[in-house]
Length: 137
Image (cartoon, rainbow, N blue to C red):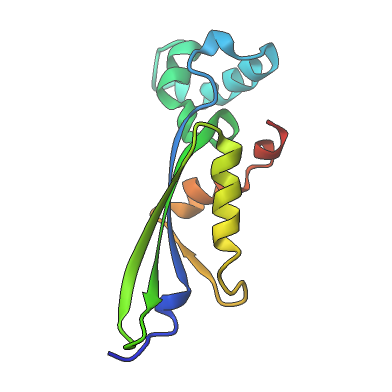
């Protein structure tokens, strides 16, 4: 099988998230107000309180959640020109450690050729990975 150069430049990404705090009451007043503004967008269809909505939905929004795991997959060409799929799961209790190892892993690829692939990446995975608040925690 001939080496497919394009497939060796794709990094498949999937993140797993949780809310930044387990309970709404543990949020700072500033973050509670921010969540209240966000919750107004879906409160019309849902009669639950901001606290209830937080426990159900906060992990879906980058500004109110944190990454607990990142799974990556990529094709690696073997000596006989066959490709094998390699998978790695990065999991630590600390989000910063997860992101640090993910960054180190991504930097091993040719940055001029690398393509990221994720299910709903544009609306979920990539905003989470790029959220500026990640740097301020």
